[in-house]
Amino acid sequence: YSLCNDGLIELSNPGASGSLFYVSSDDEFIIKTVQHKEAEFLQKLLPGYFMNINQNKRTLLPKFYGLYCVQAGGKNIRIVVMNNLLPRIIPMHLKYDLKGSTYKRRASPKEREKAVPIHKDLDFIQDLPDGLLLEADNFNAMCKTIQRDCL
Image (tube, rainbow, N blue to C red; front, top):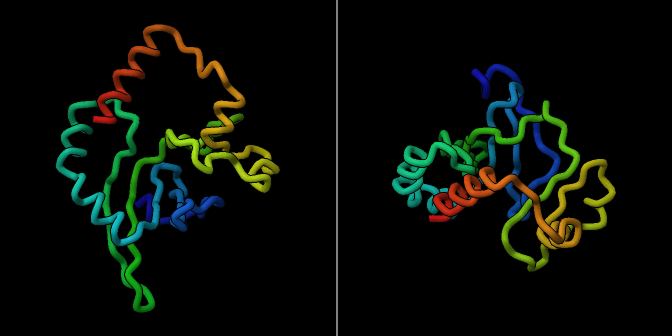
């Protein structure tokens, strides 16, 4: 119902890989186009990923609901459907796309001109040199969740 009842909303920033992103009109799902190799990689990860999602209820990883291949115009288009962790109804005053790398990880001048630009790793280091300050319980819970997600 969420994906087919109303049109999808295309998000303005395609990923560096050229992937396109869409959000369902009810804001529940994100749809991302993926390359063949990425689709194969996701399939290989599935058993361990499924176990982690079931054992780690506080995971910060996206929840993948489906991987599909649609044929259109003689081309295979692979899409993955996942939960939307950032609903549009919640206003964002700062956005960072963090990868854990500093190589070419600064927002472009064009990106910086936007009302709410998406900054990157080097921007985060520059803008928030002390990082984020969290209460001890929240910090410990987040560290535990990230460690489990990384495993």
